[in-house]
Image 1: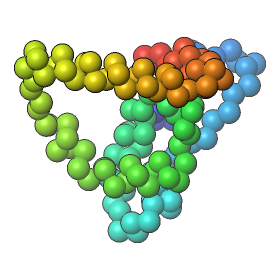
Image 2: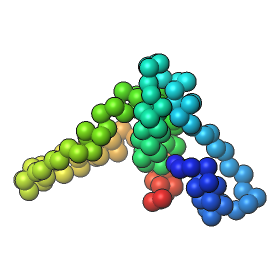
Image 3: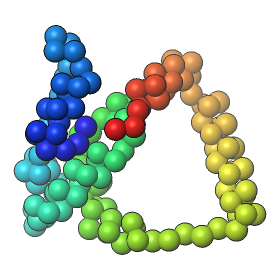
Length: 132
């Protein structure tokens, strides 16, 4: 979840029963500044990092978590994210078909590598990923 305290409070009230126990680890801009190695980072960049972290898939967050390593890697990308969002990519139909085949092959390889337990966990996590 990403947003202001007010927005998150409203979302929590909507999505969870009042007696349901949940575990929340909040990340603030100041937490990001405290964790990253770049001590010259500006508060605006820390805000961008929070937004980038929030854009990750929910099952990815559950599997990988959000810790110091994730925040640090995002800090290396944060200054360039505005450029990437403006980047336009165009593909021909043939290129798109080739890319789709390669992605399918990669997924097949990953499926072969995953153990049964890993696949069950992944399916559970995919079930948790719902649009905000």
